[in-house]
Amino acid sequence: DTNYTSIDVYNVDPTADANGLYECDEGETIELDASGSWDPAGENDPLAYYWDLDGEEGYEAEGITVNYECGNGYDEITVYLKVTDDDGGVGYDDAGITIYNIPPGVTIDNVIPQPVNEGSEVTVYVSFTDYPDDTHTAEVDWGTEDEPEYLGEVTSPFEASHTYCNEGEYYTNVTVTDDEGAEGSYGYEIEVINVDPTASIEGPDRSILDET
Image 1 (cartoon, helix red, strand yellow):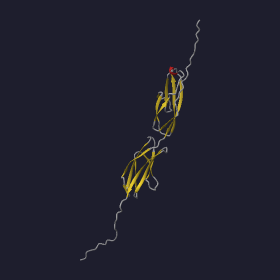
Image 2 (image 1 turned 60 degrees about the vertical axis):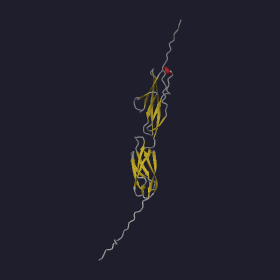
Image 3 (image 1 turned 60 degrees about the horizontal axis):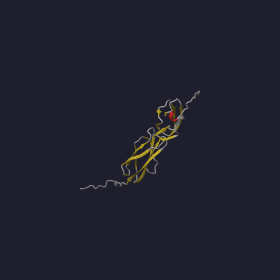
Image 4 (image 1 turned 180 degrees about the vertical axis):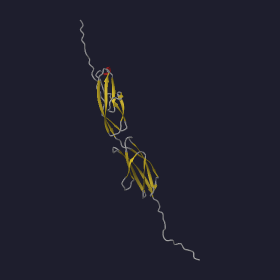
């Protein structure tokens, strides 16, 4: 006689692995990777991967890897991973993302005029790059003994002007600060040239009248 035995095989939930912690600079795009997830049945139990990237209801991205666009830093956020097998098993994991603030990149595009005569105004033209949601302030150290000139809130590009009283070479430094306190600077040496004095004679009229 042949005896038969019934064996029940139960599905086991997959193990989800979101592979955190991730780090990125603001504005950078990184890849989230769930390839460390696994199922005891291996290839016999295919997996599907779903990502919640904004912490709100629902999973808006699908795939074993997905791209994530890092927003304004500094920030710490959490993304969520759900992994399912074709037998209805579900596994969950999450991963932290640390987004770092980066300083503005500052450039002096032009200085007009250069060189400049002492007593005449010179203008520096400045541009900078940064994450678009940041706000910025600026100041200019004109290379004199005076305190730097604070310009207040600025957007790119902007300009600033100054009049030097004496000839010389002045190392001018422009600093742009974002709303997280990160600073970017750019320096430029401005040449101021001497101007000859203008002579004048003042006094009573000493013209001689012709008497006849």
